[in-house]
Length: 289
Image (cartoon, rainbow, N blue to C red):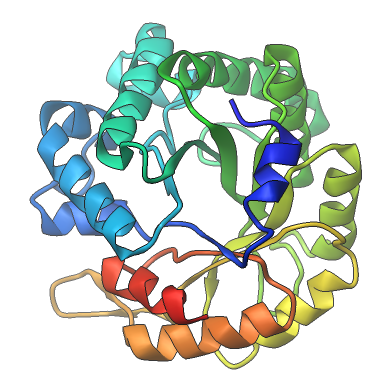
């Protein structure tokens, strides 16, 4: 696994480029809505490998393993909680096959708000245990680093920080979903939260799953006042509109996305990628930033 100093060295020559959306692109490849993403990928590994190779070809230097919701408390709905470590390890290995020696693989973790009151300190031990079991599998699979994304509450980040320390994983990126003004959906301002995480040892902090619009560079500038190290910017391709097919459609073109991300980089974002509504064409545009 990368050390924090090795991670920071990756940023010496310019922005570190991440990947884009995974789930929506797998749906285009045939994954049914509402299925267990992890098991579908294990049954259809070629779809994931093809997508992730396209991201690497587009310039991604870090791809996220599809372990987003592979914690015991989530896998329990499928009766797979006892296979948590095996599932995480195998999904990382599939991403490694896609990346080869051209990109790093990040083990992906996320919010547990859909399964427990993850804002509540009383749930802290439960959160730590769930994240810890997942991290064991991610490390067994050979993840180069961890990426905790779409977090909603500081308690989740603190639990991941604790679990990572317990398992010896020192290189972890933390990104929150938030409102365009830089506040969490609980109303708490995110700047001090990111600052505290950075001081506690985070390799990089920032946001994802925020709509890319004209306010985005201002948000990056605001967060840069709190964050001294690498700042992650991984937004959506604009605000979605639900189409006649019942699916969200994102209005921003790859070129518009690239232009906006160039502004964000100028404002201080140094780790760049895409979230909902993006694909390899969007990531290719980041090569011009």
